[in-house]
Amino acid sequence: TLLSVIHLALIIALVNVFGVLGCAIAFLLINVLSTIVIRLTVQKLIGFRWSAGVRVLLLFSGAMVSGALLITTLLPAESVAWIGILLTAACILLCLRGLITRLGPDHWLSLLFRRVRFLNPG
Image (cartoon, rainbow, N blue to C red; front, side, top):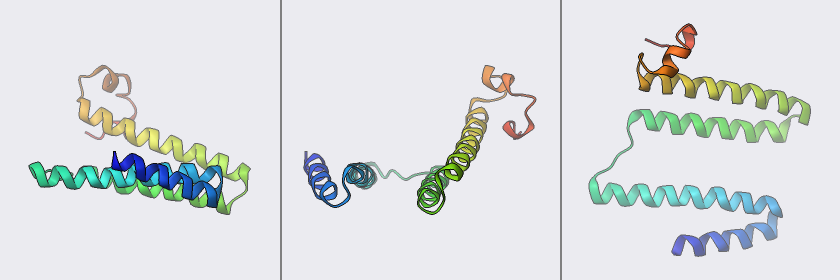
């Protein structure tokens, strides 16, 4: 497909510039491009739009990834590891809270964490 050809071209171009890191950058870029193409296609075909919650999740995820990339370039490795652990724990808790909210109060996962106030917004 056209996206596969673009992906291959990105890999070749970016590996020549950045080395192995270029392959990872190409992977990121092709996934962003693919998401945009699919999003625009389904919007045109069926009027699809992302909900406000999905847009917030995309912004949050983008901010977390950008922050992680920023700290890896600015801070020493030991600090990055600890901050990475904290960011990962925060993401896990937020995702678990969202999952529990969507599953409802009677689901076994909700019951398991019912005493953890932060995880039960209701």
